Length: 236
Image (cartoon, rainbow, N blue to C red; front, side, top):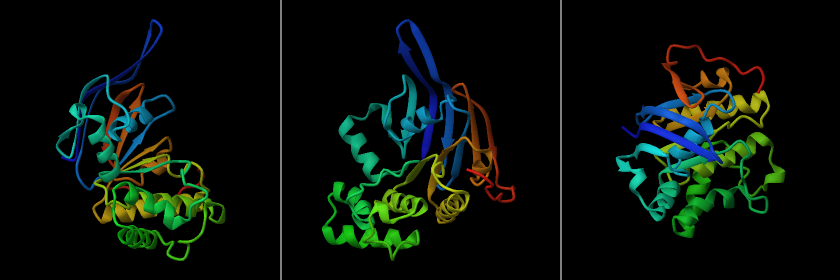
């Protein structure tokens, strides 16, 4: 099992008020699954993604990633896990505007202390995977929103992570670009990549092979979407 979340709770305290962002979640995700986490604003989706991405600790409960008991690891080891085992894809791309597409993709490889030759070779390889082999020297302001998100996906893949985490990855894109990004995810899934994607849109969630629905920090549904026909997004 790649991910095991056992009795996960996350409580925020504001004065005398306790807010239960996550309430006794139990989730297992196997290697190679494409899972959509869906729910309305305030359902706990982003809080869950932060915990799975080792950006935040649960108030209580246990989290294992690739057999590592995340709760018990020091920050230095969590930094290494985030760099080498998890690829992050965000709604707002988070590209460095003064860097080229190639240089943006090289960043996680640089932090992993890969040689410069390997950085450049791997960056070109993953940019080719997402169809941007002819945009390596372009900066962010020379790329469309869909192309910027492709660069972000390439960057997330640079260190061959066990897990891709995507937070509303089509939220800033038009419907055509959004469909192209989801098609890339589907191809990565076919190749065996594990993907966990946060979304509020049921149409987007149906592009995954499993859908987990949250409401007020609780899991209210966990269902396979393998038998579905692939919908085309009408509006993002």
